[in-house]
Length: 270
Image (cartoon, rainbow, N blue to C red):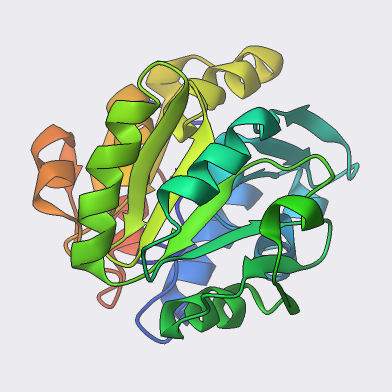
């Protein structure tokens, strides 16, 4: 199969344990673009945290795309146009805050440039700040502070406590919101039906690319729908066991140039 679009999760997939793209992986992705393939960076991150990587891979020059907020916002890197933006229903926010009031979990969201966090800041909140390199603003009244359009809520906390609240929130908002983990210490709350896998068809339709011509790489639960949808769904060697079960192929880990090895095997013309 001639894979024309390559969708890449970032953390744990494209970047290694030092949050860097290795030279070999970057070279393979540049070669793929020179051969006419398009790249989409599909991440739970805010666009601010994706843009530096998009520039490093020259997506503006080669006509690539950013899929931020797990598909909640799709941006054309060549034109800067926001092609799709799915908004979080703010009417649920007061209830979510109330459900979490006795927890040690930080509630976070984003404006155009910053992370907005409630006052239960923990170490994992700072992980998010450091990953996307954005200013973090801590507010005492989260509901009053969020009076603007948002694409997602991010909960940050201890893995065991997040597991407990994931079940509570998933049951409470069944059919209304999507709730899933993107890391052991991050829980994403998304508009219902907004996942990487559900939003990719919108882009493929615009590009006149078939799903069989899509290769997708990921490692965590927010990548599951994307890997299941793609013609070639690739789980990283460091992926969660459930992700590996649904993948078409399991490559080496993000510290072992898994993406480069797979591209050399299945995508690049020698």
